[in-house]
Image (spheres, rainbow, N blue to C red):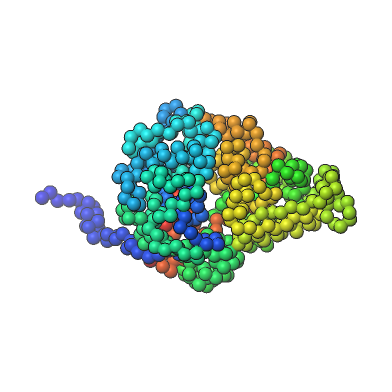
Length: 544
C-alpha cells in the first residue's frame, strides 16, 4: 500500500474521527396565534389565506427569498425563460403528490391558471387580468409554459405567488368561488386535520410531502385571539412559540420574562398608509387630501401608538424603508412638505378649498354647507393600528375635521377595501420582490376589485403602460426612471397618505424549538403571513 503524505494522513484521520451530525429528531407541535373570531374547516388558499393555508397547506411553484436575494424552488425545481423573454417554462419536481396520494402534475398547474382566468379571486397577482400571460400550456407531465404578451424578464416574480390546486378535488367542488376544501387536500408541509374547533385547530404532517425528511415537527396548532393584547400574556407565559403581532413594550413584557428563550427580530417591513377613497367627497379634492397629510404628526404616532418600533415615513412617493434604495430624492425635494407636521398649513389648505366652520361648532363643513364627517376603517383587535387611527382622528379634530374610528372584523374590512367601498382606511402596501410589484398593486387597473391597495380611485392608462412595459426594460437606468415617474405620480395625486414604515412583528420562543431566523442568521424574512417565507421557517424548526 502506498503511504499517504503526512498532511493528507492527518486530514484523513481528522475526517474519520469527526462527529457525524444526526438529523434533528422529528416531533413536537408548534403553537401560533391568529386574530380571528373562529376557525372553520376552510382551506382554500385563494379565499381563506388567513395565515393558516398559504405556505402551510399549499405551496407555490417557487418564491423569491428577498432576504437572501435568491429563488427558493418549491413544487418546481427550475424555470427557464425563452431567449426572447416572451415565454417562461417551469419544470415540476419528480413524483409530486397531493396529500391524498394523487399525482400532482402539470395538468393541475394549467387547471389552476385556467380557473384564475374565469374566477377573479384566483388571479392572485393579476397576470391574466392584466394580459401579461396570454396562454398556459402543458408541455409534458412536469413542464408548463407560460406565454407572455411581450418580452418580460420579471414574470416569475408574479407567477411565483400562485399556488397550484388539485384539479381532481376542485372539479368536484361546485362553485370554485365559494369552495372551502374542507378536507385540506393540498401540497404543503401540513395537511392532516387533527381537529378544528372555533378557538383552536391543529393540522399535522402531510404524508406525501415532497421533502421526505420535512417538516421535523409533527403539527402546527393555531389559537384564535380577539386582539394583540390577548396574545401578549400568552407569549409571556410561554403558551405561544411563534408570534407575529404587535406587542407593547416587547423588551419588558416578553423578553424580560425569560431572557434565555424569549427573543424577537424586527427587520423592516411594508409601508403603512392612510388610504383615501378619491371617488367620493371630500377625498376627491386634492387639497383636502394634502391637508389631511400635513395635519398628522408621524413621529408622535410612531412613538405613542407603536412604541417606536416602526419608523415615521416622510417619503410621499409610495414606498418606505424596505425599498429605500429606490427612492427618488427629487420627489422628496418637491413634495416632502406633504409629510411635515404643519396643522396651520392644513388649516390654510382647507380654507382655500372652501371647507369652513359655517355654524361655529368647531367642525368644518363641506363647501356646499353639508356635514363633513367620515369613518376610518381598521381591523378590530389590531391594537397598534386602532391606536394609530385614534390619534389620526385627534389630529384631524385639531384642524376642524370630524373623523371616526371604524373598527370592524377582518372579513368586513377585507371586502370593503377590495370593493372600494370605504371612505378612508389604514392599510399596508405589498411587501414585494421589487417596488414595481408594489406600484402594480396600487395602480394597475386589473387589480381594482382584487386587492386591498387599488380601491382608492386614482388610475391612468399611462401608468398601466409603465407597469406593463417594465419587464421588457434591460437598462437599470431606464428601470429607475419608471420607478421615479411612479413615485412622482403618487406624490402628485396623493391617493394615500404615508404614515410609517412598519417593523416585521416576529417574536419567537426557543424553550422547545430552535432553527429560527434572526439578525445573526437571516435566512429568510420572518413574515408568518407571507407564503413561502412561513414554509421555509416552519420546515427549519425542530425540537431543542
